[in-house]
Image 1 (cartoon, rainbow, N blue to C red):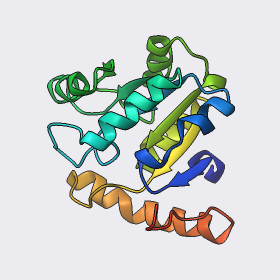
Image 2: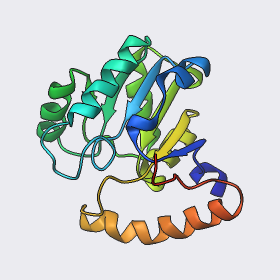
Image 3: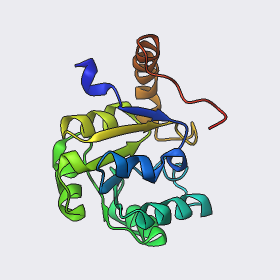
Length: 173
């Protein structure tokens, strides 16, 4: 079970994911989490840096889709700022949302990555779907009360992974 929780990469932020690395791995599509991955919890818009990173992805021939457990309105508004498709009410970590995201991207598991800040939703779901999984440090500790509770268990899992070779992101990025 622990192997399904282990990300392939662990990086400081979504902007630290190099599109060239993704292309070298054969990645053609990226499934993106929203809250605390692309923006702080409830932030209405992406930062200029995130917008520029998404443009760099596109410049390397990589498409993106937002897959979020949030409701339609929040995800639609945010995705509109980035100009990417979206899937709300995803029910991560269930595989259905990840399969739907790949259908939108026109990719298969081998050519798809997922980037998110939560082990028990983004990474577990991505690994179950056979995707290349990238965990990023949450942008903020301000989040939904249920997520805060799960973070305690997530911290234990990450500490175990760090002891067994998964490197925590440096603060230098």
